[in-house]
Image (tube, rainbow, N blue to C red; front, side, top):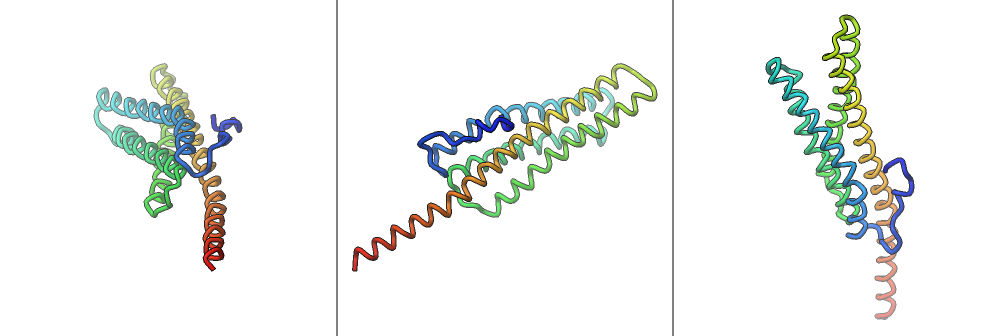
Amino acid sequence: MAGDKEAFNVPDGVSVPSMDFAKHVAEMTRHTARLALASLGVVFALGLVEALSVGLSVHCIVLMTGAILSAAAVWVYNFTAVMFAAGSRRRQFYVLTTLGVLLPYLLGFYVLGYRGFWGLIETSRNFEAGPAGVAMGSVLLGFFLLSQLRQLVEVRQWVDELVTSAVPAQLAGEVQRKSRRKRKRR
């Protein structure tokens, strides 16, 4: 989706920003956001299964709480992209959503790097199929999560660029209309 430049075209007859553009952005990000949330659910399940099998540890808590907080951050980040597309004014709250998307990235790198690659290094010393499978699954899960987050960020950046370039043009048009009205009154 995000790598395909055709997906980043604004449909004909749709103005930026508008509710129609917001619907288009919501439709574009729906599949990617669902996949990101599903992969975060798998991360949560991984932490829960580990907590039930070996007991509650710091790693389990990091996985479970990180997955829950990351799911909320991904949803809010996607929601603000749709709000920007609808023409909502930028507020300080939106900066927090941009910073909040760092949490899923950190969790993705934790799953990919520590649980995945480091787990493969640990199992290479004394090979066992179970831990090696978990480590390889963590590599794939972390990579998949990071790729979905990258796609959401690309769409948000595209929306930001379109809206910021369209808003000054709209404001200039409003200023010209107001000056014409003043001239007509004279």
